[in-house]
Length: 198
Image 1 (cartoon, one colour):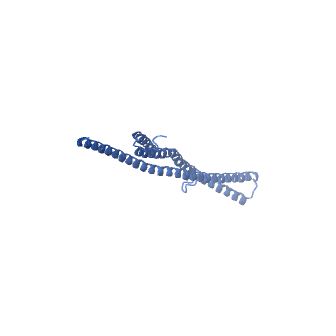
Image 2 (tube, helix red, strand yellow):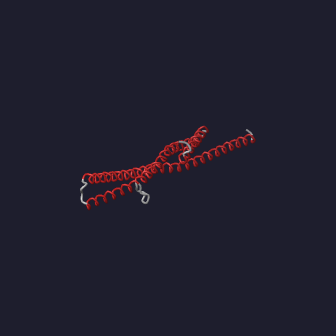
Image 3 (tube, one colour):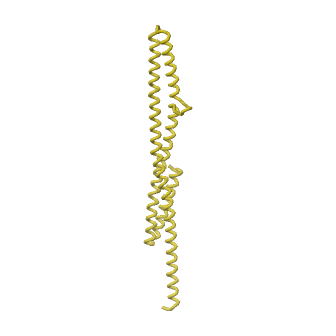
């Protein structure tokens, strides 16, 4: 082997080594990007889970408060109706007693109306129902987001493994499989945040 052949052989090996290093650097950069997307996705999934739990608790508490108002309102309706029947049953009742019962009936009816709607405090049945529906809407939105974050996390984790294997084994097919799966994971993550689909 003469000097020129040896020189060409060395240059060929240098070119192969340079190409191999570029491929490894590209794969390492891809892994870094997917790891960053995975971290962001993990935060989104965690927040969606917290929103589901918190909104579900708030909705349940609001419905319980609504139910308590309903029970108190019904109790007052029954008491007012009983007093009205008492006035009908006893037409000869003395004036002060009749006036006291009439006054109590009016108080009960005002309280019944206040329990129905209380815009100042936002604690009437109407306002409580609206608030419970808002909490349910937040919960339902987070429930729709959550699976997309799960899909994204799984896809990104597997993609990172495939890309790592492609570096060790110098397998381009593994690189492209990891790249494809990582891109699907990133799209699932975007869908988890913005719900373009589902």
